[in-house]
Image (cartoon, rainbow, N blue to C red):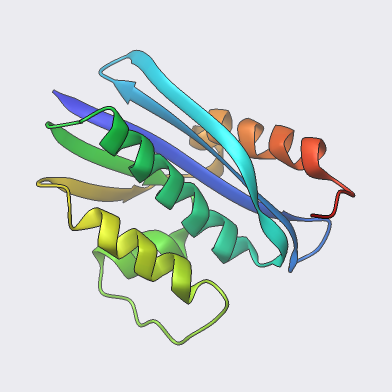
Length: 139
């Protein structure tokens, strides 16, 4: 059995901007978890994407997922950096990347797959709902 997590992050109304994330986790065809929230203010889209990954990985740890895990994302940068050896040149998302790598080390069998945005609609909708919930707020 493979556990599949769909992740998405956004930064609105500009990049950098209000960063939010969403994720959905399935075992086979059954949804077992979802989440959404604020990644931060004045953050980039890449930061929000990595926040989505971190939060999904935390949830997968809570669920004690032991099987194979497949992470699906429409972020070519995230998938490329974590599965294809793409260079990491720097940026505001580096701390989230390090946090993600630490969490990834706790999984036995985890892979990444880039998917077109149209195949990531549930996670995208959750990230947009989170944006609407946090738009204009300041911590």
